[in-house]
Image (cartoon, rainbow, N blue to C red; front, side, top):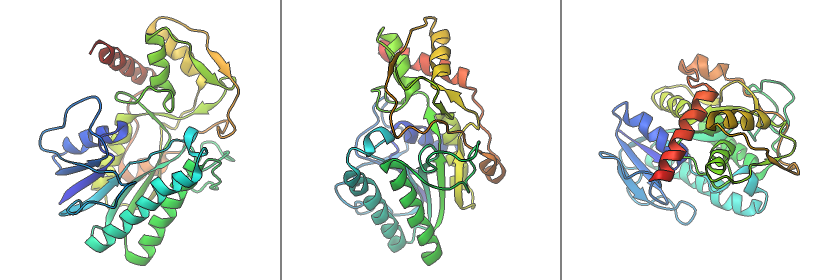
Length: 306
């Protein structure tokens, strides 16, 4: 049976495709645009299609046993600008996908949720999966709504699903536009001698997870029979100020950041408890933050040369 990877040409998706290909699995990738940083992989079937404009094309689910759904048109920083659009482009297409899977008989779905937004302001540290769910961004609300639809589909129609609540993935192939992904954005700004902007005073703490560690967890979820919700993070918190410091040391040039007013949707601290994923999938993050930043810096410089 094939695995359909929706959003498999994106930053996270391309690494998940790598992890699944390494296991010799048969893949079909559906995305609205090709990969930005490399050509199509041999042996992988690619479909160009925009789920926000039309339902799944005919044949997309043919011979598919598992769907990995990663596509999203918003990020936390943009979702509150137009919550209606967030619902229309992310929630509704996912509900249609679930219905199409039911009709086709495809009964396993791996969904990339958000550990950084579904919990809201943390009451416990680190945050376990049973923490109260009070998101303060449309992005988090939509991710949580999808989780609830998956649970409903499981209860009513027997869907096997895994929702991976990812923290802050970073690494090669991440966009560097400044919309999402402070590590890639800061590295690119260093490369071009541009100012580094920090929202707030730099004390905001996030759980940074290298994208290959996230891809490994997703691949294990694909091959497992486990179901439910799982945090996907490093289990360690790092402040934005510390990220600025680490990057300055790695690139060999410290830069005084430009501080901007804090944003209302940025919760002060998010560190995920990842013991459930470790126990269920035998998974542990492998790449330390400093090594991951060094790898990403090497990739950023390579892309600039190209």
